Length: 215
Image 1 (cartoon, helix red, strand yellow):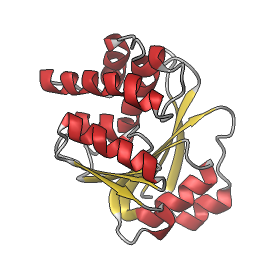
Image 2: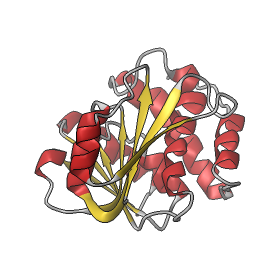
Image 3: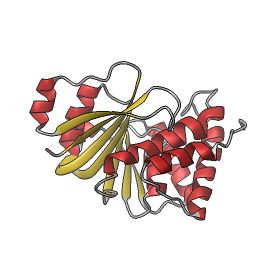
Image 4: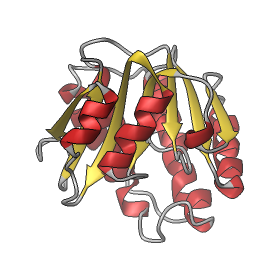
């Protein structure tokens, strides 16, 4: 097992940025259990890079919780889909933060789905469902969607629009320089699209959130 560097302050900075959100003791325990699993089984199975154990709290857990900013004004959605969920980031940390929200983790790869199911059982998250599938073929629609660097910004807008209710909100995490969405794509969805840079005082690195919501 890799040594996981615990950085609770990184998560606390994000919670403050979210409007002084709080976690109860059992929620912190779940985050710690998730971090331990990510540093052990997820890395061994290739779900995270081999050198990520030192950044699980500061990058992966804290980063996942920044997605909640999309619902800072409206409150958590009743149902949320994590598209291309992999080993459950950002969906599982959001499910821990929002225990009343039903979270669906969707991924095309059977191996990643199996991994996600194991950690959901380990954490006893009754509000999480793990499914194998492709968002392009989804028939259901959700109040919320999250995507963590699965598609380009343009593709994310198209996919999110297809799985969201008219009043739904989608948030995609972006790193790097490709953060533009063609105006034609925005017009096609008929939704508002904005780019939010996460302050460097909150999260290390150049991280942005692409937030798509109703007009």
